[in-house]
Length: 218
Image (cartoon, rainbow, N blue to C red):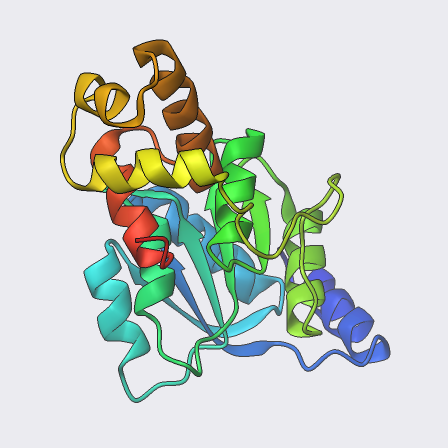
């Protein structure tokens, strides 16, 4: 973006009463080219004064614990084999808003993002206009989930039977043991597990138990 177009963005933001640019934004993404490109777009579009990049949840936790205040976190959902959403429970009480950025745009990913406490969702296929709208919305204290009705602010409550299945899963029970303990067929157990996985936005048993503990379900 050239200087003229950047000034146009600044003028538009000033007229809208926005407190932009944000002082500092943290991008949590393990793809350097994407992270560097997004950082450049944020600064060139007058959306952020400074941008930091972390490649893992651990690095992000360290950045958030540092002396510099972070005003917004842009978080990828998949980081070096770990779930990026694990960052949210590790943030302190004065955590900045988090917007999930992902190449996956399916409803399960979006639901998991909002259930974990993210203030918005931005697909990596989005352009500059969507990025500006997102930052404007979140900086006002709002959310950004374009094209979707507002999802519940909390993960949908499991049915009593699903809670039983989850509890046994957390104890390391295989499906056969769970079915025997609850007097269910293995097919029914698999159906319950599929529903639980969908609610939590996970793909396997280990992620399920870990995320459920982080969310206070176990």
